[in-house]
Image (cartoon, rainbow, N blue to C red; front, side):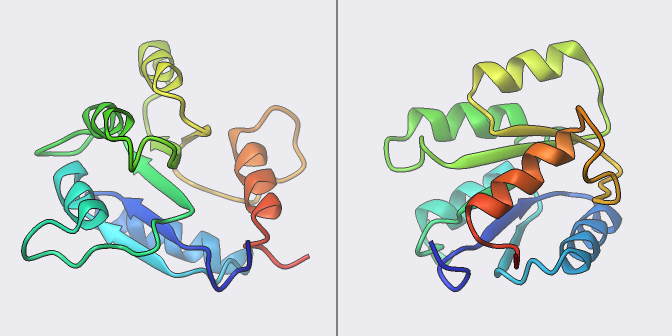
Length: 147
């Protein structure tokens, strides 16, 4: 998949956290289009092209998903997309300030690609065991990040 086809959907209700993600992606030179939704409801509308909302086409390569949001939280969003045959295979990375095992298990049961504890920082590349390492590897595999 080429970078021109790749895109990211950021589902984050906190403006400062969203800005942080944008800054960190620029830092590592990920230039794929970044679409933003403020909660799970808005993200679903974008993915499905619900009336009044333009459909994301093609679907995003990666979804960066906050767990704690109003209207529809990250776990509810994951449950909904995993039930939808046209969205069930989306690659989703959870981003949260929570380091709770219950959140991790709920996310893992819903087939997330990775789990990133905020504040998001890509400065820890190469350090063993970091959730960011799996994200970096995933971006490399998708060729979204220059070699």
